Image (tube, rainbow, N blue to C red; front, side, top):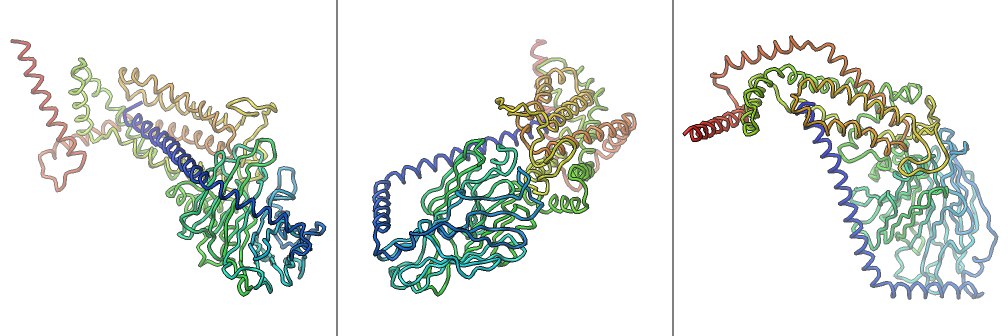
Length: 632
């Protein structure tokens, strides 16, 4: 392995481990912030507890108070009403006047059991709207509403209060995943204090596991929100996380999302969030995480203006999110598409502007998704072929200059001459127009593409439910080999696609190292012994991480490795070392002939060469002085 390739791997390792270190540092900061927030919260815990106890006591008293304006509303029998449009079916319950079940009717999205996807069902979700009156407090989940104005795609849930009512109006937009929800007070001017300007909502939900791979789906499941400044944030997707106290900026929307589906509460007026939490639930429970958010929204007790929300209840599909956002209003600048995670800012735009359109174009051809991945791999490899060729030719140049490098090694056999030997080699490369770093940059340029697809493929919902070869779903792992119990580090299965990729990577490493060894001196080969074994071990290490990853992602990497090996073979077969050396010799002669000509500008390489020559001259003078001293 030559120096430029070593440098490339070192830089890639620095990027990889630097990212891991950054993630660990960020998590440490977040944990410290949470600890500080918990300490602050603990100071006010007694006061908050007493206030809560007083509210609970008041509610309990109201339950038994037959004269309470809400006594009748506490009595009733549970009932449901179904509204639907072309895409979703929503079941609402009169207990709390809220959603009880949401089912996606689109046959494209199937559950693990084969039926329609159900985002949540009885007991999974609770949206409790809380208002403080002069003589009574309202917590909607405690009361029975009366369904009125029922149509196929909408209704009003009405809660009778002191001669008036609290109405929650639901309406489905046609051909969409949007449910409009308006909260309005009717004839309740005397029920609320004059200073009432807002209401509180506590939104809790246990998120159902929708995909086969619990661990992989959990990685992409979290609470996400967008502030009024236009920035999207999310709680940690690993383990449990919680934000307390008021946020610095108000919020446009809050999303409870899993890998491929989301429930987004979008407010016409900014929300003030006080608590947002995510708790990871036990594997095998059928659920991923427990989400909870407490926030306040503007409220007009006169009933002139409703408190309006839009609820998106559907798939995390980029185009679908964009279309539904347009129905709300383009001027809102919601960027619901950010729910489809596509990586860091630079990586995100590579995915949005390149791979999203490429995937959509190929998918629209109606071909199998496994074939789409093959075609995409070929397209990507064609695009990066010039970079790969440049990297290979840089290595080939080093290889054909190997005899001259050996001559320099022969002239400087002593260890104390290592600096002189290095300077001579750099001078040689400069004279022949060969850069030891020439193959490094092209390899690094390909890294964003690798990272972009790493983020894109697992979140591309069109991959969900698509079968290929022995895999029944390319969005999750293939588990033809499954032994039914968990083994630490591996799980309960072996992904054949992952194994194929790891084997192909090892073969690629063997071939690459064999070719590059021709450009290395025996000393360099000996020094690179550990690096060689690391290259062989890396795919094995990757296996333990990628065994539970998307079969589509592993299939892409496998095809990419195979095509990479074929491209390396082609370049080796079509590269004539004698012709390449003759070209370098001609370049050397031209540079030597023009050595004394005045140049308009001085390149970085030329400046480095001048510095090296000056340093080399100083070293030679020092060596001569040392030799004379030893002679005397």
